[in-house]
Amino acid sequence: MTVRLKITIAGLAVAALLAGAAGFVLGRYYSDNRKPNFEKEYVLYVRPGMTVEQVMDSLYVGAGTIRPKSVERAFAKMEVEKNMQPGRYVVEPSAVSMYVARMLVYGWQTPQNMTLSGTLRKKDRIAQRIGSQMMVDSAAVADALNDEAFLAAYGFTPENVFALILPDTYEMYWTASVKDIFDRFKKEYDAFWTSERKAKAAAQGLSPMEVSVMASIVSGETLKAFEYPIIAGVYLNRYKKGMKLQADPTIAFCYDYTLDRILKKHLTVDSPYNTYKHVGLPPAPINVPPKACLEAVLNPESHKYIYFCASPAFDGTHRFAVTYSEHLKNARAFQRELTARRKAKAAEK
Image (cartoon, rainbow, N blue to C red; front, top):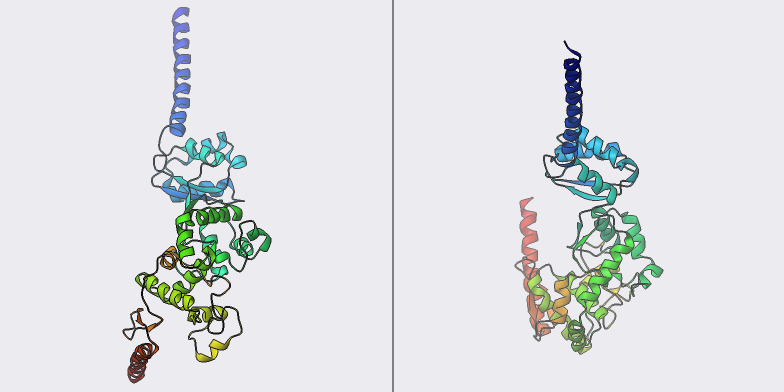
């Protein structure tokens, strides 16, 4: 073999090694930066204090990582262990390892829907609802709901804070602080109370806060949304006549919603929220009323009803009356049906 041939063979071998090395490097680059690496969409929650190993394990199981080594290389290159930020991250099947690593380092979160709906009548329950959906501790939310100085910045107090919260679905970052959440509440509250709605409130002889108070009573009376404007009309009729509102939900509030039934003896409770003893509205809302209840007070059904009671159909609806005698007739019909149902139930035993 000639010297020239040996040199040529050596050169080709080196070239092959370099080509192989380049191919290996390019292959890894493509694997980490261009090739999708997950089988399914996954919502990855990174909590404060989590280790990078816990995050990778969550990815491997939840997103169905195809090439774990690719994730390890990308995380090492981006120093995810040192730089990752808490948050809620949506990992798509089309995502590459390097994008996920950058997402965690730069905090590219996907917003979370925080939904407040249904019956909201106790602060601890509201705090739990928020804490179960957001990173914030529910105890911190509960503290804020009772913090005079904190709420004063929003123009509210621990007593009337229910009016600040409008049931809705709020799109927010999962890592939002307590202040961020209350800032959003105030933003939505201000947006709701347009000049048009304030004018409607004034037309009813109410301030926005008084509308919230009245709406909270309406909310406590029925779960049937179509009845909201009718019941709002009843209470507004009483209010404008200077009558006592005599609203059972205010009695329930006085007993911190611990009563199974409201009896005559409960109506004498000593509280400014007892609308059987005091004329006018109670001092503050007794729950967080739905927007539909607020709208019902602003746009009540026009009628002359003064009284109402549960329907003997036991379907959650009510019967309404203009006169007390008519109301008594409705009440007796309900009582007869209640008695009949109790007898039938007792006979089954």
